[in-house]
Each structure stands twice: as structure tokens, then as C-alpha cells.
Amino acid sequence: MGLWSYCTARHGARHYGRENTFVAITILLLLSLLAPATSPALAADAPGTATAPVVVDGVTLFRVRGLSAYPADERASVIADRVRAAAADRGAAIDTLRVVPGERSSDIVMGDDPIMSVFEADAEVEGFHRDDLARWYARRIRGAVEAYRRDRSPRNLLAAAGASLAATVVLAGAVLVLIRFWRRLNLILESRYTRRLRSLEIQSVQVIHAERLREAVRTALRVVRALVILGLAYLYLSFVLTRFPWTRPAAARLLGYVLAPLATMAGGVLTHLPNLVFLVILVLVTRYVLKIVALVFTSLERGTVTFAGFEREWAVPTYRIVRIAIIGFAAVIAYPYIPGSESAAFKGMSIFFGVLFSLGASSVVANMMAGYSLIYRRTFKVGDRVKINDVVGDVVAMRLQVTHLRTIKNEDVIVPNSVILTSQVVNYSTYAAREGLILHTTVGIGYEVPWRQVEAMLLLAASRTPDLQAVPSPFVLQTSLGDFAVNYELNAYCGDSHGMAARYTALHRNIQDVFNEYGVQIMTPAYESDPASPKVVPPDQWYQEPARSLEEFPRKAAS
Image 1 (cartoon, rainbow, N blue to C red):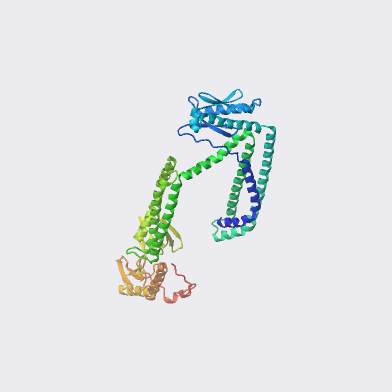
Image 2: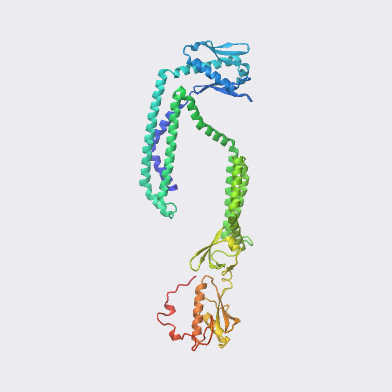
């Protein structure tokens, strides 16, 4: 995805510049046509005073306050209705609009019809003299009446219809240009970047298939195209609705649907801007602290920095623990500054996910704790030959949750760390390199054979076996005196635990050869009576067909 985006950005800037220029000019023209005429700003509402706007044809004339038993909304609605009624009466001349001063109020009338009364309370809200405020209101009402009649004249309605038709043609052309541009862009992506996507698929070992990547890009382009078309449709509707006086309130509401969420989001960003700045600084500080900590533990892992009693293999897991602690501490500090963290919804979601984690992650946490316990107890390390329960293999990976063992049959056995912590673990590699691992095997020999001869033959078999150490020298133990045979145990030192199976095989072969050479019968595993002839193989029969000399076999030592 990143490669495609990069390539598309470089090519797209040249390819669809002309089409985008046309679309941008069209949007700017629509925006310029849509921009309403500005009006003088009214005085801000006095603190604690409720006011309501007087709106005629989607244009706010001014704001009025409520009176006793006469709420502001109701008063503003009555005034707007009177203005519209006076404007709709073509027989009422605009010159008859005047202000009639009175003792308690200044009345605005048109002909013989009252429009509104301005009281001292209104003047206090706006900060003007009552008569001055009434004259200003009269000017605003006069402009609204003139605009009302002008906008509904046949000439203006015809012009509005023509502008709407032109906007429709522009919108259709923009959509057609957009569709043609997107088709061309798809062809470019298909023709120029398919080979690069295949290369990316090969380099990523088919983690992401090229076809899926192409489909994801197509979907993203469709979403962008849909958003652009929706934006053009919104501009078109806003422009057309503002051309006609009857639909201007709908245009204002449509604009509010877009501007209100944007204003809310902008207000939220401005409100939480200090918190966001603090969070950014906290993230930067945490990031650099983690870099310093990572540098220290990397030096510990490489051995350039050492601490007494701290093993090098502890560096990575200890760094993970310290990193989690630092991030957790930073999260605790950042929590009160996160926008919305004090809301009930945020707290409820936090509790919900905490309960889910506590209920579903018990085994995960147990395995993680067991994994760290194994590391710090130095039970084994990667590369050791171990036996866990009945599984014998080499440790190939130690993870937080599980440990991977590779058996001598080349099987990958995954053992949960919590199981290892509660199981008996035999580590064959701990003393193999220093003192040597003892390989041992047992044979049963009859009482008629001198034990000194048996021990000498076993030691001879050990001396013929390669990769067994001469120092310390092998030794023989008599483990038990059975009913029919004496059990002899041969013990020999080995410096490498990974070739145990191959060495046991070679040792057993040599034991059979030596006992056959000296005519001594091995009575393991059972004995019932003396056979007519000893159960031994004379040397001249060792290589009966199809057997050949062992030296001719292309042997591969089992690990």
C-alpha cells in the first residue's frame, strides 16, 4: 500500500492536474455565488438576557429580547410574520414605513399596520437610545421588505432559474469529468503498477496478495470519489436553494448541518488545546526516555556495559518490563488530560474493557509471568537440549506465552510456559560443555561370566565410540544382581548434548561387536534357559548380505 501510494502521488500530480484545475475553479465559483451578503453585527446579548433572532427569508434582521409573559422566541416570530405580511401587501407603499415615538415605546408601523414596538429594555440590551434603536430596526425592516418584493419579482425569479440551470450544467460536467478522470486513473494503476505490486508481493513473501492490495486501493479510490461527488452535490444544493426566497431557510439549515459539527469539533479542539499540547510533550518525553533505556539495555545485551549479577540474556526481557512500566506510568499521567476522559461513556468503556481483560486474560497473564520466571531462574536458554515431561528437544524460541522445542524428529512442540513452570525439566546442556554429560546404558550378563571381563569389554566398547571423552574416563557400575543375570551400567562422558541419539547408537553397536568378539552372550531383556549354542554372532558373519561395512554407509549423525 505504501509503495502504491508513493508512486500514485508522484504520477498523479502530473496526470490529473488539468482536470483538478477545472474542478477547483468550478467549486470556487459556486462558493463565490453561494456567499451571502454580510450584515452589520448586532450587539452581543447582555449577560443573563434571553434573545431570539427575527428571520425573514433566511436572513437575520436583528435580535429581540423577551418581555414579561412574552418570550423572546414568540415575540421574534410575531415580528417576522408582520414583516412578511407587510411585504406581501403590494398596496402598502414602502415609504409609509416609519417610527412613531411614544411615552413608553417607539412603534414601527407601515401604513396603518403595526410592525413592532421598541421598549427601553430593548435599548438597554443593545446599548442605544430607544428612538435611535427603533430607527435602526426600521431601516433593517425596510431592507427586508424591499428584498422580499424584489426576490419575488418575475425578473429575479427568472434569473434565479437561469442560475440554477447553469449550476446544474456545471455540476453534471464536473461529475462527468470526475468519472472520466477516475477511469483513467484506474487504467494507469492497472498498467503501470501491477508489476510493482507483484514484486512487492514476492518481497513480502505473499503476506499481502497483489490482488487484495489492488482491491483495497480501488475501494479507497471509490470512497474518495464518493466524498468528492457528495461535496459537489452539497455545494450545488446550497447554491440552488439560496437563489429562491422560499428555499433559503432550507439552505440555512443545510449549511448548519455541516457547519455545526465542524464548529463543535473546532471548539472542542480549542478547548482541549492546552491538554493536547501537554499530551504531545508527554509523548515526546516518553519516546526519548524509551530510546535512552533501549540504548542501556542494548549495551547490556552486547556486553559493553556490565552489572554484577546481571546476565546478558536478561537484557531483552528486562527492557520489555521497564518499557511496559514507563508506558503505563505515562498513560496514568496522560489519562486526566485525554479529551473526554471525565465523561461517563469513557469511564464506562474503560471499566468494560478492564472486566473483559481480567476475565479473559488470566491464562495469558499466567503464561507471561511463567515466561519471565523461567528467564530469570535460568531454567534453560535458547539452544539447550531439554526434556519437559516426555518431550526431548532443543529450545529454539522462548516467548512470553510459550516455549518452542524442536525434537530429534524435527517436530515443533509448543509448550505453554505455565505448564513448564509446574513440570519437571531436565536440562542436558547445563553441564555438558563444562563437566560433560554422562551417557549411560545397561546390559544383563550371566553369573558365569567374570565381572572383570564384562567391565573391561564395556570400557573397550566405550573407547571405540567416537565423541566420548577419555577424560574423565568411562566407568561401569553394577546396578543390581538379578535372578539370572548381573546388570551392568556403562557410563561415559560426552561434551555435546545435541548428538545423544547418534552416540547412543554408536555405543550400542560397539557393545554388541565387543561381546560377539569375545563370545559373551547378552542376556537382556530376559533369560529362561541356556541355549544349545551361545547366542553370539561370529565375526565372519557380521557382514552377511545385504549388510556391508558400516564405514561404507553414508551416515548422518542424528541431532
